[in-house]
Amino acid sequence: MADIDIIENAGDDTIATFIEAILRSKLIESDAPVAISVPGGSTPFPIMRELVKADLEWSRVTVWPGDDRVVPEDHEASNTGKIRALFEPVGAHVATLTVMEQVPHFALVWLGMGADGHIASLFPNTDPKADDDAPIRRLTPDPLPPEAPFDRVTLTIPSLLDSDALMFVIRGDDKRAVFDAAAEGESDLPVARLLGAARQQVTCFT
Image (cartoon, rainbow, N blue to C red; front, side):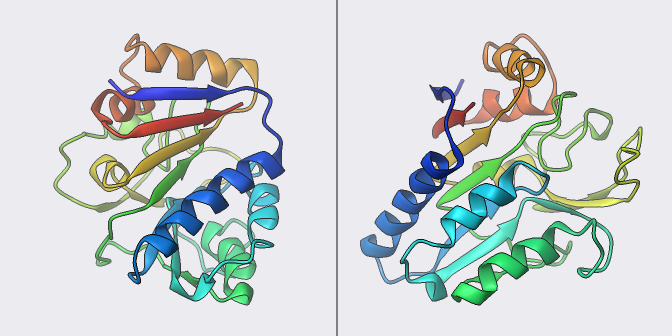
């Protein structure tokens, strides 16, 4: 079971500073490129807008969407398009998720979570496995979220766990209850499967 650090009532600037510190440390540690994975949705982008203000060697950073809708990048539902618009102007590289991509080891995987316990686009109906042999999968949520009725492409649990640290931003009492139950091993939802297999530090901002 994961070692989880809960940080209550964290503002966007606090979360951005946390991510910046991890990136800065990794960039100093070696000359190797640094990869992170970030989520889509409404909550992360204000945090990312704070993060890109950081004075970092962004040209050595590759940002991976944890998942995306299978739509063109200029579509309003595309996570990758929005992430690219934020990070490429500061010099970072942004990966495009396809099932042919070779997934790196991540310095940090930042995840959101749905009220149904899904992480990335690993919804309960997709039965995600902690020992999945595929790094990336294309799949169809069921039911399809009405606000984004598209097939998805997503990192799998092993890819998410191939990281030095995991981070969640969980907003709202309903989601917090789902996360807490998963952390205690009281459910078999995708988030619970991830946390049950995690051996790295997990930080959850609320």
